[in-house]
Image (cartoon, rainbow, N blue to C red; front, side, top):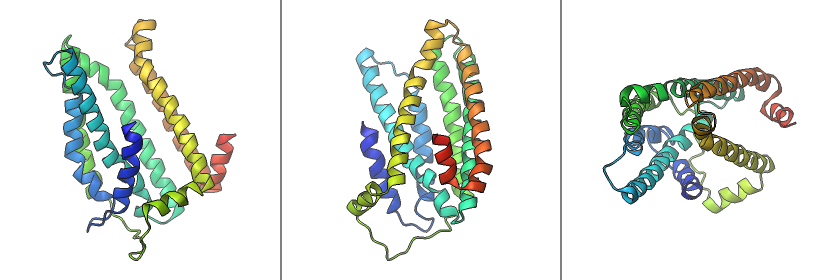
Length: 247
């Protein structure tokens, strides 16, 4: 619920950020270390009682999602200012999603084996060390992303829209509203499925070891889909591909 409030606020702040590095790149740099720290702390189990651990879990997870929003929203908008060419933007999005899914593939395949290896029977310790490794890698790659990108598309410096005007423009944009509704449905589906899948394999099938294999095949299929959609979007345009895919 807090994300539903914080994310639009973060979008407003990022869109109005002006530095020598641009609007969106600085947020990737500024949030790199906080993201890594919160990723580690969220998967650390403190020596508190049951109530204390619950409060700790709420606080660290909400903080992690806030840092994630401050990092990911500007990152997602970055392709729009790297180039103004539609074909290049489509190519950038394809590279981005394929690389992200490949990383997810690696993490999903390695996470539980690493937890078992580092934990030695103590899953709390295993998750702490495993997420510590992943968090450190995330910091490194965020810094690389900041250092190797440039914002080439600059907005009109005289443009001064209010937040109310921005929201009014969005709500009057039919295609945006359609994509907004579709995105909500997709993410609800992903959250519901993702939230129960590990428990399904662990408690219903009694085969927690199959969870990583299931994720590997699912993510692999997503990568194939993204790669296949790129030439279609380049040839017919994103709008036509979206309409055909919706049908």
